[in-house]
Image 1: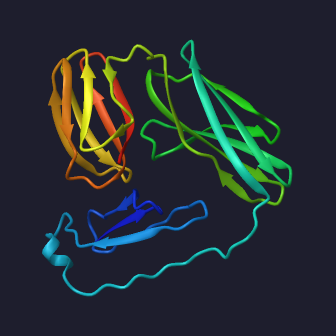
Image 2: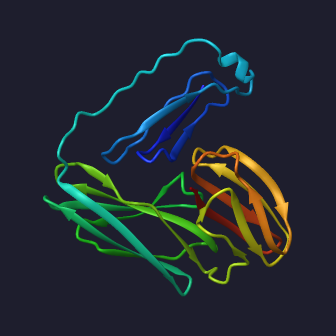
Length: 233
């Protein structure tokens, strides 16, 4: 089966579909609020969707509610001279003991870039290559409670991008390119949903059959590679 995690507006924020087993599981951390889990029959590498016919059960564990001393971790950033300047604002009842800065090239798999003292307020990062980078931070209180910030994306050292793509889309993704390119669209679990190619000028990619949610659009040409997060409304 395939599980989709939806927010209170019924937008897909996560898709979990194993390639080699029939079960699916969600392991994530969410802000407080209302969420939905949608179950759908799905095939995998060894069977078709017909193999998902039958009964299923849903089970899970959760951490009991507690009042975290960290109320908010808000991350912002800007790009200048090929560097990414990250700034954040933390609202907490207790002192923050440590801040961890994490980066990603695809917006899903993050690695630690720096560990900073709890009173740090910014971090300057120089990416090894151009293109889009994703960032988030985590704040650890003196009582060992951790809270993650929002995720932001910056395009350091590549402000003159050959690709122009809107962040919010509906049934079509419009790409204005300076040269011919190839692309693929993946969901937030990394599963490739669509591949194709485009030419210099304006191009439209049909995503009308995909549910509303967040996707990663990867484009590459002979001179440039770009990863952009898009939101289908």
